Amino acid sequence: MVVKNKKFTEEEIKGSDFQAVRYLGCDFSGLKFRFSSFEDCVFTNCNFANAKLDQVNFNRCTFPGSKLSWLNFELAKLDDCNFSQSIIEGSVFQKQSLKTCSFAGADLTSTVFENCDLSGVDFTESKLERVGFEFCKLIKADLSRAILAGTSFEKCKISGTKLDLDGFVSFGTSQGFVLS
Image 1 (cartoon, rainbow, N blue to C red):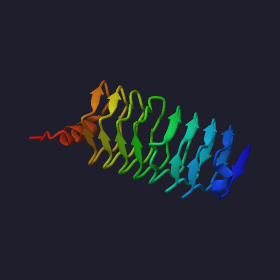
Image 2: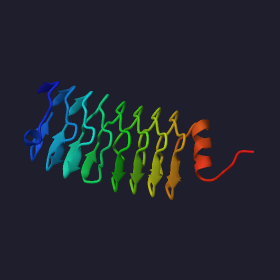
Image 3: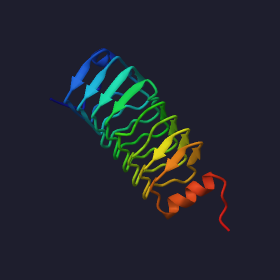
């Protein structure tokens, strides 16, 4: 099933299950998602800005070119989702296991990850400016070619994580190191 350029209402999504739906240019902005489930769905160039996520599940979903800004993902369940090439500015991920998700090439400016397991997550070529990683596991995560200006890593467990030289310098300065 393909849905194009539709502005959704809360009544259309509340408490519903959606499987293998392709959404193209759809608008979900400002809606309250409550007790909804999306499985194997593709959201291409969709707008979720300022939506409220309350007990919503996204399983094996992809979001190419979609805007997921100013969202709090704390009450959402995210399994095997691909956020590559999406815009996720100013959002919050709390207490999430995102080990099976990808953020390659995503714009995550000013986003916060708190108490998240990001082990093995792909952040290659992502824009991570002013992102806060707090109490996160970044074991074997890939931050190659990511923009890390102003990014902080507070009390994170980091091991085997890939960084390029610019990322290494940004990480060092976030930990209080000074180049001389």
